[in-house]
Length: 356
Image (cartoon, rainbow, N blue to C red; front, side, top):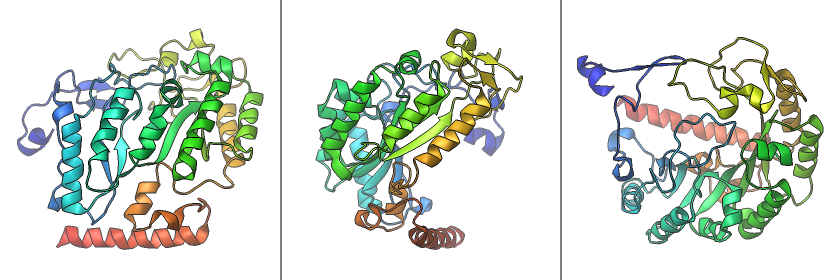
């Protein structure tokens, strides 16, 4: 792409849902595990800024609702430990960076990876902080993961729970019975305490889950002592069938009828959020799922923590110490105004550097 933009050299593309796209089929790349991202002075990184860092690509799991095309085998496309250590130490030496948003579909997909990266992080000349994505069923299989992740500097994690209904869980490829999943989440909170914020994501409209199950989930989430600090509800999105072989499709999207769905509109959509065709199953239709997701979200958001998996590193980049926002709600207006003011100042400073 860079060469094409610079000198007009030829560029191969593939048809995609939203137009022409560059594909790894035409430009294969096999050196990811040894590749490095080196931030430069021209990137204007602020001192101590928390940065994104890609430590792995793809996913080893096969959830039936997911359209992620980057499936991989265990251990494949993980950043080599020596490369990861190089990037972490270089960023610390140049920018005093000690915190990261780990870009990885599932940080704890294998125990070998968690152990390897724990060893890398334990040898750093600073205390690392990070946020990312994880799975509870992996911790059920390997309970030591929880402690290793805490010792590695985990501060907030998004866990794809999706459903607490046994039939729906089985139907979308989630391995744990909901009662076992709850026990695992309680175990994780026992190990992590208040040092790690747990966000659970849920999907409304999964195969076999009636409305009352959603409200039972909300009731549990609002129970005192629930290990999930924050809940995110989203309606199920089914991408429209397409003849384009390059278009990522979930198993449900490829064969809706097999999972009990019928598509009731011809809208192709963009394959993101709720931009797919309308659907219905035996319990609800898409519009009702969207309404339920909004209502469930509202019912769980009274005390949502602001320092979650998506915001923790951003608050640290604004100069907040952890104790300054720990326990703060996402609806604390005074804190939000102060954070917005810090962000505006930071953006102006960045702009000034950019225009010098």
